[in-house]
Length: 447
Image (cartoon, rainbow, N blue to C red; front, side, top):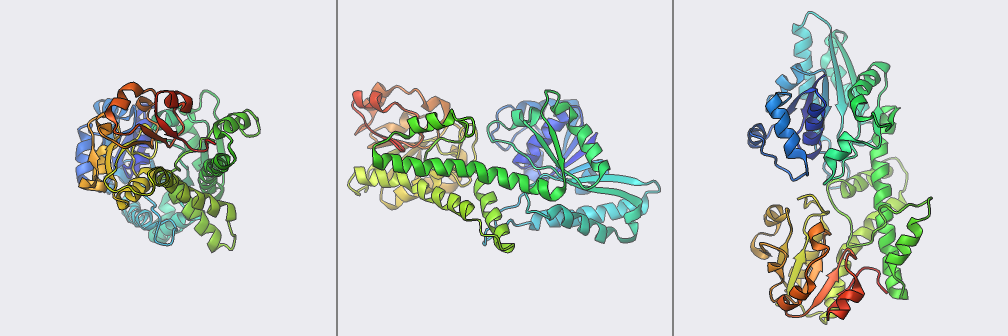
């Protein structure tokens, strides 16, 4: 099939590359000329394992192309995927300005095509962006309004196809999904999208077909539920700590209950990223607009905001609230491992709080340092490796559980640090082992 992807951000680039990998002809369009020029050379603007390989491979075969020309992308595709940013506005509601602006431009292009073409045109426009419920209906309304009398010359379909890509595992998630959700209001759109996704579900994953409004709601509901599990365990961890219980033992025990399961039960310094915070704010706003008070969803967000500052309180308590000129080593800056994404990362809050208290920060992350430098500039010293960050440090704070941080040489670490204190924000270390080696250890939910 001939596909265009409008927007080459995280979702758009992964989507375009993976569709090309399955044999489709894909044009990825973006207004960022510098980004497009780099992509044409196979230079990837984000860190995502495996993505660079399939982008370069499909560039070489000619199945994947990049352009800044929206008309070219629309003209040369049967299916147009909208993979555009929907950032939170000041009130938390999803800002659809960019999305609707692009839709208007697409409508004008389609009007021109319908006016010039003698044969009947056929276009399917698919929203892959996370958007408030009812957005697909508005897109269809906008398109029909702009097409006017030419609307009968185009067989035009609008669908919703939410993405469920985990940063750090996005290529695998796309190529081998656990389910594909398709929101359609007509049979032809369903037929086209079923055919498109058939190569990705041969192992038995279901294609779930529903109306567009339900499909739009699925993504918000899934993200809110997953965030709720983490926030809930963070609250239980805080209680365990006060009661002398070990949240790790509690987590493992409840995870064996098949009604609960073991995933997304790890307590820590809070969640972040581009999806959970944005989607939960938008979901709360949807509830507010429709007279439904989402108390649980609101609490999920509030608990997470508190959790980000918890480890700072532990540091203040250990050092007697005097952090001036204390050197704090930070391991991990991205909001999760295997990504360079710093959006809403707990490290942003933790580092800023420590800087306010007069601490000196030395930080290391395997891939996120360039993005972190854009945020902190020279307020933070960035180390070349994890051990360099520890030289003469008064404490080590583990924020992001990268694989290379899991089994460090603690004997060597002890020789580097001024005082051997570890604040384990992800509970990846054995407290007894560290105590035997002479470290003072603080975890999350360790009574």
